[in-house]
Length: 106
Image (cartoon, rainbow, N blue to C red; front, side, top):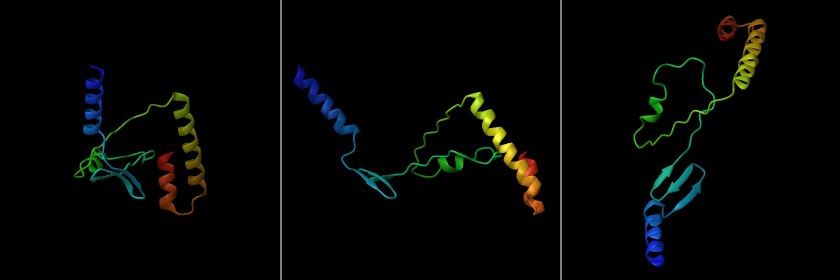
């Protein structure tokens, strides 16, 4: 019975695992497919609705979206740092357009 179970497990692994896995500069070859991984870690403070759909609706794309919540202290610290940096930009910027952008971000 043990041999039968081992054969089933090996058969299952052969079905679900790729026959070729090559790491390349532009991605990973998995069998006949080329896979790429993109990580979005920063994005503008204002985004239009459905902005991620433009990425996920590309033909042949399989997408996994994961939100990793942060503690309140980390977020408050990040916001505080961003506000301080934009206040400095708003005060020191000579170009009116960039100064106004920094003021809006504050």
